[in-house]
Length: 162
Image 1 (cartoon, rainbow, N blue to C red):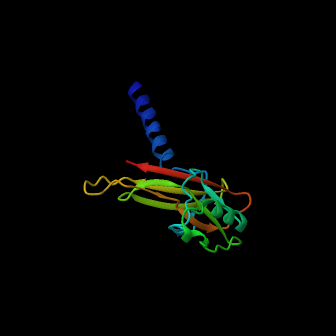
Image 2 (cartoon, rainbow, N blue to C red):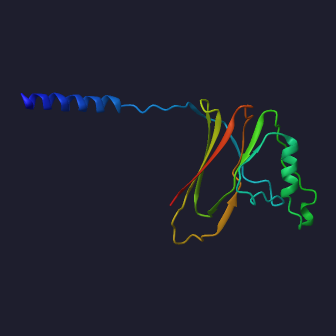
């Protein structure tokens, strides 16, 4: 009689594990956002001194950050202007990363409707190539996203793949 009980118990455990692990549930709903990535704002602006992410939602903040980031020692930069952005339909996001010239960088931004946030994922994959110079480059990873709703936050996630 004992082997039959053990068989029933093991059968129940196996069935429970099979059906309970068949699909992983998530507690959020995410959508890939339509994004316009901006490589840089030209040689007259240096935003890389901040490791904090930028969430720019209006023109006055944009101009203020641009004025404080304008390179002062170049005569050619005196009249430099930032790109025009319509902040009634866009929010500008950016965060500084450092990588080498041969690294691969992937960027994707999701809308998480449950947590009410934009999630900006930046992946840096280090390519170990002997012939590649390991010169560091800094990028602000600028992205124009649909206007950030009032109750939404932004989460920046940077992953390094060695």
